[in-house]
Length: 246
Image (cartoon, rainbow, N blue to C red; front, top):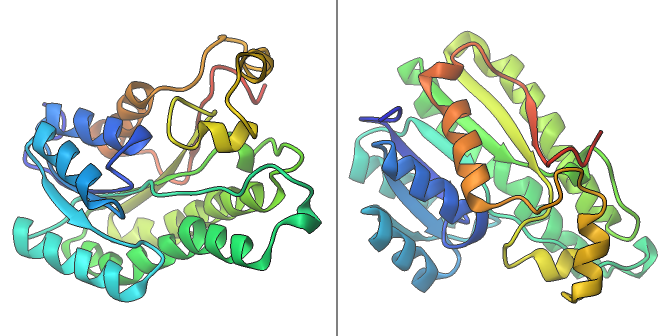
């Protein structure tokens, strides 16, 4: 029960890594708001974890503000914020990514971190405590060709994590990032271009441990970084990648 009496918001909590984080946090005693653009997915995970479902578009300021208000009304305070919601563009040469695709990737992967900070950081600072975890990617550390603007968005998130950590440390708020390799999530096919046995085998050959990241892997790592056990850890981008970035 490492997160007993803690409260948490998990964006993109309706599936994949977010669902794994929500499940682990609930198992460790946290009260969790499962926030997702898909209301049915959020409701299903919330039902499984005893949490609260919230529909949110993390790229929209009014929607994020409403999510923050709802969490504060339901919980009284927010201890943990997980910025997990993310999207990618399909693999293609950088100049072929459309402007709409670029704008959407940066809005969901980067602007969302700004928006949640805008609406929740002041609350955490006022309490002198809090933990923010940004779900970045190995793509931000070891970029792959044809995912250029997705790579860049995750690199932005890693830099944002470090600067947030420096600024918020005096206020008792820690900020870290996780960098998973691709996992069994709805985005897997998009990363690979197509989900075929051949593509999977080729991708897995680049991961020394020989498997994809799982929602459970992410839940375990996130639980540590957001628990009091990590009270001296801030500004890190922890790789959960089976050795992919070595």
